[in-house]
Each structure stands twice: as C-alpha cells, then as structure tokens.
Image (cartoon, rainbow, N blue to C red):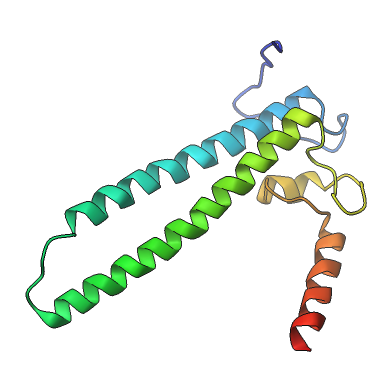
Length: 140
C-alpha cells in the first residue's frame, strides 16, 4: 500500500517541479475522484426524479413536454456515463504510471491542459491533428 501524500488545500501543480511527481498525481487523482462523485450524485438525483415523474399526465401537451424533458435528461446522463468511463480510465492511467503523457506522441501533456481537462489523453497539438484528420474523413 502506498503512503499517504500530503497535499495542502491550495496546492496547484507547477511547471518548476518534476512532472507527474507524487503530489501532482495525487492532485489529479483527487480532482478526478471529486468530479466522478459529483457526476454519480447527479445521476442518482436524475433516477429519483424520473421515478417521481413517471406518473400518468392526462394532458397531451404536458405529457409530450414531460417526455421531451425526460429524453433530454437521459441523453445528458448518457454523456455523463461516458464521462465517468473516461474518468475511470484516467484513474487507471494514474495507477499504471501513464497519466499525463500523450498516448500518441508519448510527450508530457501540459499541466494547464490537464488541470482544465484531467481526462485528456493527448497533447493539444496531437488532439488538433486528430480532429483535423477526423474532419477530413467526415467530409468524404
């Protein structure tokens, strides 16, 4: 079992410390765990809300509106479910020692990018190349 890493509340990863040292890894691990917990709590609230709204609504317009709301909520939850899978993958990369490195180039992903998008798997440059290629193939 790993030793507990002390992390002050105001800690932010800095460029002048070793990349992906224990403190940075712990910072991103906590950030990912908190994000996942928020998503899971929201998911529970949605399920409870959908169960509460499953009652029969006699007015056709109201029923249609409620169905639209429900479909939108389910789509949102599906996106969040996929996001939780990406968070889990990022947590596995932390455990495997692969977190913070581009899966395409092997280069370190900038701390600013990881702080903004902790599930990032590519450097900004590699991501942009990937998206350009996708756009070209989509236009075919």
